[in-house]
Length: 223
Image 1 (spheres, rainbow, N blue to C red):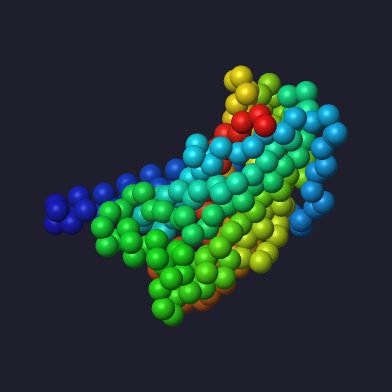
Image 2: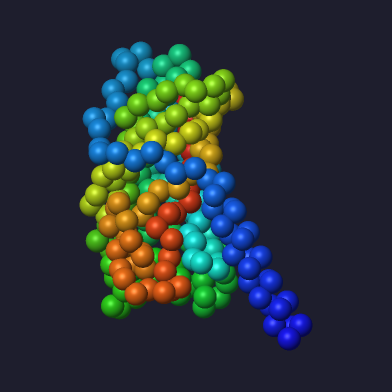
């Protein structure tokens, strides 16, 4: 009985910790796609350094979470007087990796997410049909010193939605660093529906949370 109580306590503790971690990330404001921002003719161009740029992700189930990264494939950002004016970057969806697992568990989950498993092609990101996602800046709003609300169109799996999330932007020499706070998006708004309670009935506790937590890091060099 004591061992059962201890195990139950551990399960409850894990669930509490995961829920608490998820609640720390604010949900990005999401709306219909908008016109891309246009920079001034005097704006300076920065080219994304793909080696040092990435997106960290975290997905949640009722009693566990998985983490990983996605590579940024290319991109350009336009800056005028230290303020981000416009820009786009491309996300290599086939680069999805899982960082909290090893061996077969890691390989199996990565294949499932990419949709390279027979019969599970469109469960998540279906990278053969949709190898890239893109983000294009639509507007920026300064909210504090070094803090900016960044809005842009996220295109993924053939769907485009505008999202707004906070970032910090800094400069050191010819290097620009754009780093977001952790934020969440509702994956079902881009047609990533597998295991969603808001889409499917009778999943019981076998569901996967609709919210994916993201953290974006972009480093770019003045061209």
